[in-house]
Amino acid sequence: MKRKGLVTASRQDGSPEARYDPMRQFAELAGDVRDPYPMFAGIRESSPVMEVHYAPGPGRGPGLDPKAPRVPSLFTVTSHELAQQVLTDGARFSNAGYATTIGQVMGRTILEMDPPEHLRHRALVAKAFRARVLDQWSDTIIGATVSELIDAFAGDGHADLVPQLTFPFPVRVIARILGLPEADWPRFYRLSTELIAVMRNWDRAVAAGQELRGYFAEIIADRRRHTRDDLVSQLIEAEVDGRRLGDDEIYPFLLLLLPAGAETTYRSSSNLLFGLLSRPDQLDAVRADRDLVPQAIEEALRWETPALTVARTAAVEVELGGVRIPAGGFVAISLGAANRDPGRYVLPDVFDVFREGQQHLSFGDGAHKCLGMHLARLETRVLLNAVLDRLPGLRLDPGAEDPHIHGLLFRSPPNLPVRFDPGPR
Image (cartoon, rainbow, N blue to C red):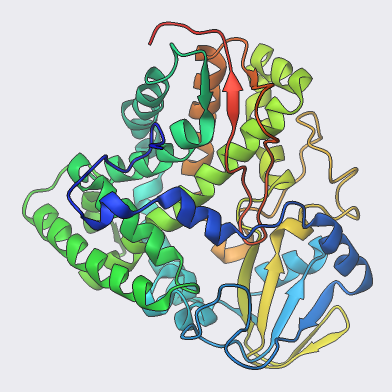
């Protein structure tokens, strides 16, 4: 059955895009675990820093590709205090470990850089995400994209908000921000989702990275000849202290942008809508008082973190939470567990848009705090306001089969079937 609203095109030509189902790819990436939080709570209570031992041989984890890099020693951090300590201590906990994983298929991205290289590179890239640029995108790209997606089902009185809205929305936004032709979107989306699945299918991710690099080489060359009002042109023209980005620095950023931005935004907006729809009183409160929208977004990010884990590597031998981590040890920071730490949050398992503002760790912290967080918040705010404005009487479909959030690596509902009062398309 063809899903409505997906970025993929309906094709019968035998192309990779015609055979590719990106939602299935994302579901496989997430991991089929409905509620990992009791497990996280048990680990956090007994050992907030825990060494993880893998069984020997190629089967190092469910679905991992034997060709993917091996981690010599792994420690997971689950408390808010220690997670924040790791994220903000760039001297002892390095990002360089990403070079052996995602760096193998994307090239040298900002993810794997440590200061001072990271600070110089971030300052250049950040030029393209300044407030003036975001304001420019708000109506012309973000608002227009939400409107066209809702237009397709507003008259039906029912929809599945994941495949018809939250899933295609951010990739269309990013493709438009990059100035990519609409005919290229299916190919772009397939390659990007194959790229992010690097630890599950190494060869396919490497091939996707090479193909995307060739694709972007043509885009960058065109923008150097003919500047446009898009992100690629802004990256080319960004300058700090007389220095600009070279092509070899722009490629990895573009490769990182869609997997990092589109997946997390689709999941976080889906989680937000699920949280509100599961608590109709809070949905009504946010609809009536739009000043609650920003804190509803932040609460959803805390309550259901879209990407549960980020990684660091111990630059030196270090003691953390009473546990010795050797130099080179791989440290997995469980953002999901930290965001539900009862030592930090009252009733942390409860979704509550009235919760007094407390910072979460879903965008990370420290020097590597998510560069695209302002764009992600803007996208989610525009999407939520449009849903509240255009879908009156919005509610979970009472005949739907058990909608829920799941995942162990990433978290979001696979489907979100709803009913509402139909209006004009």
